[in-house]
Image 1: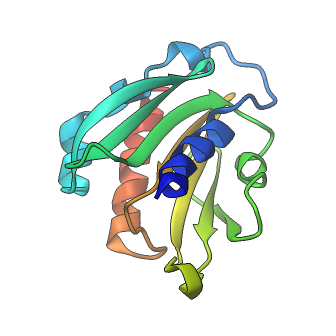
Image 2: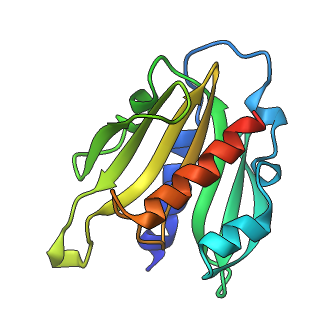
Length: 166
């Protein structure tokens, strides 16, 4: 259980860490909790109950918590690299990185591969979207999101709304 709870922190650090690129708007000055109303998140994910902004290094992460105050969704902003998939490529081989069309200038997802031995199912673990020199990072920890589903379309809609504020 301790390792399970530590994973969200590591994933946020990887996604929110420094990348290449120059930016007129500094990612560390952006509060990711201000990118979208909490009500819209809760409407899309009824299991989430509140948002909590936390600082990890120089970056700010908005953790959306479930009824047990455990992060289930995290949103962060970082300096963009050349391609959205670059930041996700640091994840190990248990993730498949795929490009996504129609979001921002460049977008990619990390899909967790199933591992029945430890109870992991295939599902989207992270969405990384580049807009100019900033990247929007959305990570899923206790929410099952599958590709080509209504839920994923809702996530993309939320992401588009967040991008408008960047």
